[in-house]
Length: 341
Image 1 (cartoon, rainbow, N blue to C red):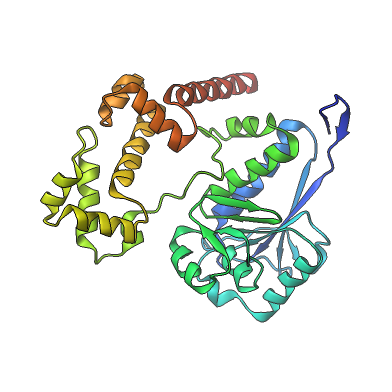
Image 2 (cartoon, rainbow, N blue to C red):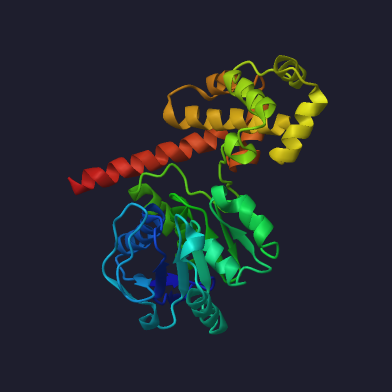
């Protein structure tokens, strides 16, 4: 496969090899999301641009957290010098890390193999000292503990992070977004949207998107005032309450509500409330036929320009551009399905 350079000349695109080192009880959805992006890239381009290898320390298939395993699985000693080696984590990752795994990853790093992680695989890289000085991402359930345990790594709440030769990612389907961004940088801007259309994605998320961490998971079960304040916000989307009203209903001062959010959520309550309303607006834009004005009103915005500005600040698109992109992707998907029938 070739692509045009800035001077109009054709440039051959070399095949890239990705290796996925599976840890016991790894997340199957995280691994399959990453692999499927590579498979679909080969399909839509018509070229074998990517190849992938599932590996384990001894070459035996490793059971994922759902009890299934992937074949073929090869010994990690047989993978050579891949373009990126991903560590695939999942449940109880700390129990499955030993000195041999850490030495193995350090050897790959010494040979300048770029390293990545899916789900809790970031714990293994951090334990090996291979995230020191890097921005890194891990599933939100593990983030607080790792920030304390590995202070030299800059853990972020992003969906994924690409920092020089480190590619770290949270769990679930976020590896699909990571791989689509890698593909976009490798093959150009046209291929990733084609893959997105095949997978019926409403948009390709970037490294500016954040993991949505449930408030109760952030603060635990013991901050009842904070959880009650958030519940009041969620119950009053169309006609937002003032912060003073929320504080009065909870039975504490406005200042105390502000301190609780700042300490345990990391942002002021007004920003938390605004983002909650905007996420609701995005759902209505993409899942209903409501007009943009009706969506704005339903989510507590009386001024369309203010709604559009806030929406773009959070999601990177205006509401009208978001809906247009969604409709275009749906049309492309419908056309592709018609051609296949």
